[in-house]
Image 1: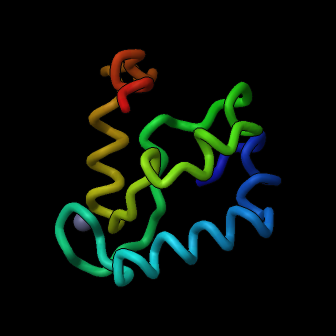
Image 2: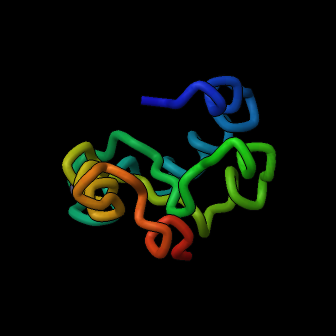
Length: 93
Ligand SMILES: [Zn+2]
């Protein structure tokens, strides 16, 4: 679920165009398992501080198209037992 600070970004025409273009280039398939994808995931997670920076939000090197299962695995991998993001993982490239 999109967080509040990112809601406007996810509604923007630029993001929608970028998302469509990126997904079309992957034939709509999850980059990890090859099943039909669902979520365009940001490797460097969006924060209130970087959501205005296209180098983060709309950089093909910072996104990957994933199915629901792979996306969940990806996010869980980045959280500690209390559900807080692990900083190392937060900023990985
Ligand atoms: Zn997958």
